[in-house]
Length: 484
Ligand code: SAH
Ligand code: SF4
Ligand code: F3S
Image 1 (tube, rainbow, N blue to C red):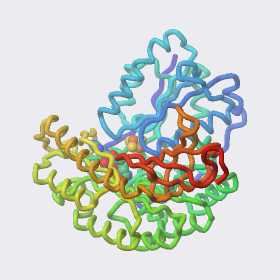
Image 2 (cartoon, rainbow, N blue to C red):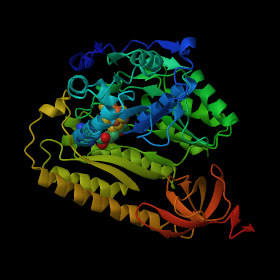
Image 3 (cartoon, protein in one colour):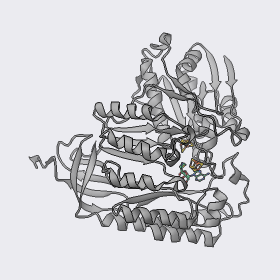
Image 4 (cartoon, rainbow, N blue to C red):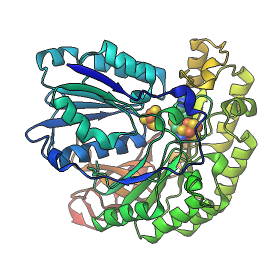
């Protein structure tokens, strides 16, 4: 069998990209001769990582179904198994490589099965080489910029060619790709791809390319279609949504987009991820003005120490962040905040870690994703001197999680006795009289009720609080078989 590598990514040149150029926009068309390539074959996509990857997973599923592949009942049954990977931390990456390694016996037993690897790990030169050289069970590796080429790539593999295609340098914007949304009432909507921020620890600008914004009319068309089909909630996606449109020459693009999204009449709008440096006051005003813009904000801070923030290249100070949070709390009293934090950044002192705890005390987040720093090859921070032992890092992580948990519980306790609006995501897997869903504040609520419909919004009285979930009872819809 033939193996070929097409355009391996050059991570070293990624930092010197021309950030001014506007990305090329193309419309996708399924090659006619490939539209029944998957006839009689099943597929399974296993997705890791962030919402960008989840959305890519939906696109991959959409493409495959347009080629008449059908969803497999399990990974073992699948004729085509795709690992949609994440590269953000080394440990998670090693885990995925282990899982790919475990596929070897299955491939030996069923050589006709196709195994593919895509996502952010498929944008890393070293990983791609390893996959080709050391994992013969892998038939195809394709990067984040060439999802739209999947039909041709699969055709090549099915004809007996083992082809590796990775384009890391510059991605185009491809409109009109099919997709199979995981939930018909909740949509991830990409508003931009890539990231130009180059935080010193982060691999994303190398795996996802430079920032490329979609045209506003394309985004709005997607949202209107989704709404017409009964959609309730959209989640606008980008690595730094507040910078939306800058690459298209737009001023205040994100606020304009947010307002236009609200004007479509969709019930709920959320957005991920915000960057404190690019947050504009007009966006806060739009949040105040439109009830459909949810009053919960994921605002990663990473550290409470100015020195660490500087070495991370985050572009704001701890005081700037506090000021932003204060401003939002003053204007939107019910707002909830979540964040991301990294402990054990190279050289982080006890005092600097303490500053992170102080910031947590000040902001009292509703919850946080917390991580131990992971050195990613090719990023500047991977070369920073790191004296901290793994034990110290783990200890700091534990202390931080304890502190976060304290405020999470305290904040949740304050909801007991209140009625929240929950978008029902269906009954729990174990009990049909217990449902779950998210409130406007983005609280996960498990609640009692009967005959409630997935995708509908219900009033739910909160009866109990845990650190990261709330319990309640539906007070609109049906409860104990009574109409209420
Ligand atoms: N674009 C988003 C987040 C992208 S990655 C933002 O800027 O906020 C999600 C989170 O992973 C980051 O916020 C950061 O906390 C964490 N992360 C990224 N790179 C990391 C690394 N090398 N080690 C540990 N955590 C990391
Ligand atoms: Fe990574 Fe920073 Fe870009 Fe977020 S803003 S994706 S942390 S480089
Ligand atoms: Fe992971 Fe890539 Fe997202 S590295 S966090 S899947 S952008």
